[in-house]
Structures are given as structure tokens and as C-alpha cells.
Amino acid sequence: MNTAVNLQSAENARQAWLESRRLGIGGSDVAAILGLSKYKSPYQLWLDKTSRSELEDSQSEAAYWGNTLEDIVAKEYAKRNGVKVQRVNATIAHPEHDWMRANIDRAIINPEIAGNVRIKDGKLTTDRILECKTANQYLAKLWGDEQTESVPDYYLTQCQWYMGITGASFCGLGVLIGGQKFRTYEIQFDAELFEMLIEQCSQFWHEHVLSDVPPAPTTFDDVLHRWAKHNPDQSVEADDELAQIITEYKELNSNIKEATTELDQLKLQICTRMEDAEMIIAEEKRLATYKYQERNSLDSKALKAAHPDIYEQFLKTSSTRVLRVA
Image: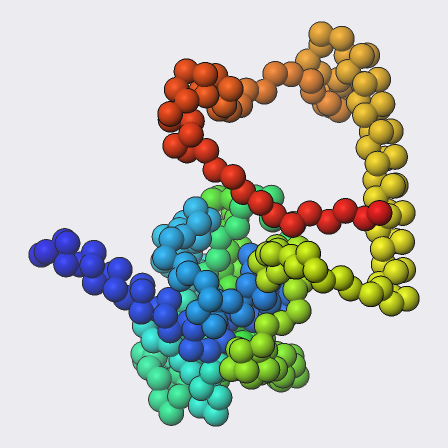
């Protein structure tokens, strides 16, 4: 078996999958459109869908392990729930709206419908699907009681999107939290919620992607990307609303400065009371620690003095727009 050919085939398949994501709205896109995503704003999604951003050919550490552990999560879900699951190696499009796309993790076989799952007339030959997730332990509080629909909103909308497109009425969700806690959830199809998702996503797809009109920025990174350069000959006349926003900004900024000063004073009192002790405790519970923490940093002054040629070679000047309120 030619390993090099297999690796190339896998890379080509991944590249094709990345390209196909630009042909419509997928399950993970829904959360971004609704402003629920931790990873992408509506504007960043628009950049992606209109080919203004690079394809995500590299994965984050969390995404890598999520993909790597997907099969383990699927098998554990099947074992705990006494069901059989099956891969569906295809992008499923809504029969009436081709831009609505679904790439489900697994289908759950319903023997009363079919012994194996396939796509027939744009729908799956089962009424059950499965999503496989991983989460770090710090996000455990976002997951509610097992066998309920108490999952993070960005996963709930993904499951509803997939059910609406595939024709499923049930979505099981298995999640491995912190690498050692496994939970399962049951999500029923909500037709009313799905219609709302269609409305919001259709508006984004038609009014922004197809019309090539960017959505309004929702993060400061969006603003910096869209208007990276300023025009020194242009000014904006403030209306009452903008003037009020600036006033509120100044007041809040002043409060932050005052709070920072108070915080520094409290920090001084705490550290003074600790002297050379490492920890403060109360009733055998740790309240605070004050100890050394190592970090690596580059001594740029020493590098410039010892190797000025290398320093100049890697010196980078960057610029960004800075807001200053008078």
C-alpha cells in the first residue's frame, strides 16, 4: 500500500471538503450567523464564504483532537445506548434549498426503517442522527443533565439544522468532557426553531454572501479588518446618538481607571501582609498564592547588541488604528 498516495488522497479529500463549505451554510455556520459562535463572527464567516479569507487548511489543537476522538465518542454512544451507528460520507443538501448543507458525524440506524442508512430523495433512511463532541473540563458547566437538551446553544442550533435538512426527528449527542467524563444528550426536532434558523441563515446567504455585502461588524477585530486604514482628510459629523455613545465611553473608561487604581491598592495590601509567604489560607482553604512564575521572553536589546544583522533581519514594524477620545 502506498502511504504517500493515501496521505495525498486524504489531503485532497480534506481540501475538497473545505471548498464545499463555501457552497452553502453548514451546521457550524449557523451559530456564527446568530452570533453564538466562540470562534467566528458573522463578518468573519462572510469573509470565508466569499473567498476573502484563506481556507482553514490547519486545525487548532482542540479541533484536531475533536476529529481524532470522534470515532471513539461515536462507539461509546452506541455502546451506552444500545444502538448501531453508521458514517454518512456525503454532504446532504436540503431538497428545496441547495445552499442549506449538512455534514453529520453519524447516522443512528433505525431497523424499523432500514438495516443501513443511505440518502433517498434527499433524505436519510433513518429518523435519527448523532453528533460527537469533545470539551475541556472548564466548559463542563455549559452542559446540563444527561438525557436532556441542555447543551450549549451553538451545538443545539447545529443539531436542529442537521435534523431539518436530513429529515431526522431525533439527534443524539455524545460528548467527552476533560478526556474522562462521558455524557449523552437527546435533542428532539423543533420545527418552529428550524424555521427561524432558515429565516436568519437565508437572509445572511442571500443578502450578504450572494449579494456580496458585508454584515455589520460585531467585534473590534471585524472593524480593524474592514477599515484597516484611515483617511486623514475625512471626518464624521456626530449626531446626538454618536455624541451620547462617546460620553458613555469616556465615563466608563474613567470608571475603569479608578477601579484599576483601587485594585492595585488592594493587591499591595495583600502582598504586604503575605511578606515572603507563598499562600493565604482560611479554614484550610486556599484564598491566594504569591509565588514565582517563569516565562520565556526574548531580550531584544541583548540580541540587537550581539547580533545587529539578525535583529534587523527579523525586525517587524506593525501598525494598527487606535481609538483616542478627547
